[in-house]
Image (cartoon, rainbow, N blue to C red; front, side):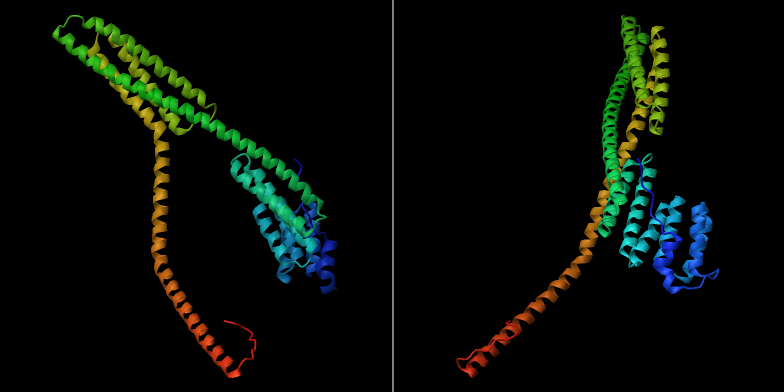
Length: 378
């Protein structure tokens, strides 16, 4: 989208606004000549040189709104939008020319707009704030000069961008909500798998004891346990695939850690399944135990960051409550003093009113039936 070029005061206009009446000479170091050279450097794209000339001119004319304005233009061209906005703001506060003030506000709007463009790829919410600020600044410019059509056009452009960003933020929030739901399902699945693995581990220990005691039927139990262990392995593999599908490119560190733990768990499950198929439940225990531990670590990796955020928010709320409590305790003596002062003032006022009432009655008695108005009736 097009963002209209910012206003700039030319050398000729600068002389008319500021220097023509004050400076008649064309000395090399006169403010008029320095601004002229600065504007020439600006037109050539030599922004460093332009700033140098403007700085020299500002030493001689520190209150010149024109020098401030053109310095802001140079900083804008250099991409220093924050610095440029500061100079435009100074211009608006110092100039007595309404047209120049309007153009300064307009350029501040352009600075906010450009800053919003910078933020768009990294932080949509910050970008949104800048675009909203640009609309406000363009509106201020129009308030100073309703004929400034560029400000009106840029305001409409900014509003269209704001609408687009709001749609993108909404899409991001919906996508994040879907991801959170999928992550909850994955965590729930891992919890269930860890529980089933613990139960399979206990069965292996039981079968191992029966085997050592020569209890009949323990081999049949091993066959059933083998099927359970294979089901646990397939379930863990499915969770691994679902977790991988959630992130196309950049995988968060906690998810990477969880994936590594799931891989280790699958290795333990594979070893356990082999030992069970060889009727060695006593040796399957090692793999099953490793599998259970790794599944629980994967759960911790996926939930620890969330828990830390909750705790951080909880601590922050607690800190805010304590701060409010401390503020109330500090304000209490102040309020008590204010109440005491207010009470004293009220008592004084009532005393004055009472005395004035008595004096008025006394004056009326002395004047007989006549009445004389007063400037203030208590």
